[in-house]
Image 1 (tube, one colour):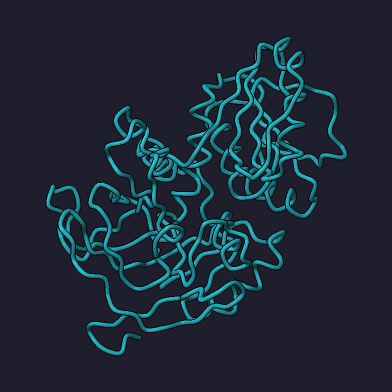
Image 2 (cartoon, helix red, strand yellow):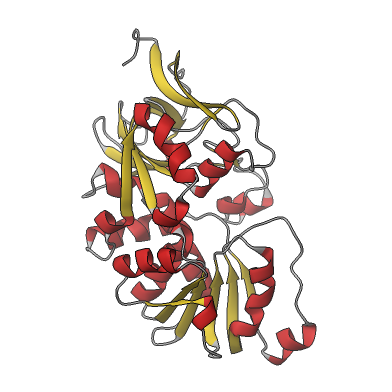
Length: 334
């Protein structure tokens, strides 16, 4: 609990491999922003990378956390949010003036700052964020609301792909982002196959998505797919993925890693393939995920495989970082 009204509890990654529960000043009010009490935080692969010291361009110490469900502590100036409303936070803080922002693509803002990565995030009791980055989580609970952001990444990739109902889709990589892409490709009407090298990861995904075909890479056949999504985070898999794309198909890269994409131009051209990068998500994707949740199309409780508290996360997050094959989505409840 906070020591006084001006202090709050936060989980701080002070350096790679070290987490401390600390007392920090509550954030100051700011024009155009809204104060929120954090209720739940999804732990992302990025958070594990920060803890492990594998996240480039990050300054320690850092309060992590960008998958956020929170309760408004005041009304928004535009009237969209009332004090007490449960909200989903869009963690992508954008400049509003660069080319990407001007053409309606703030998800790839040239000066983007992500909560919990480029600036302190939500593994704490309170945050103050731009009003435009807060969406009412009508009909959802805190667990569901905390999972909207990571699912929106997969939903954004599916929307970018423009896949057609009844077509075939392959998702390579059965982690949370790949699972989200498989889920929303299925919602869009595709016949979905999910592949991974890990039988344990696939078994976990199959329990969440029983209508999706799950297969190990070793047991995969020669079939090509209308749309292929890569969510592996592995440059070798990304380079090999083109051979899985059917003629006339699309290849969507959800992963971003250091390294060079490289595949034979004749293979790319003979397929007349479409190569698509997909980064973050837009408000439209957040709202699509929330709508699907409200309609019962997202198995929220099955996805939320692990839970802890802010105090408990100092011990649990390192444990889960070392055993991510059995964790689909872990959440911190504040």
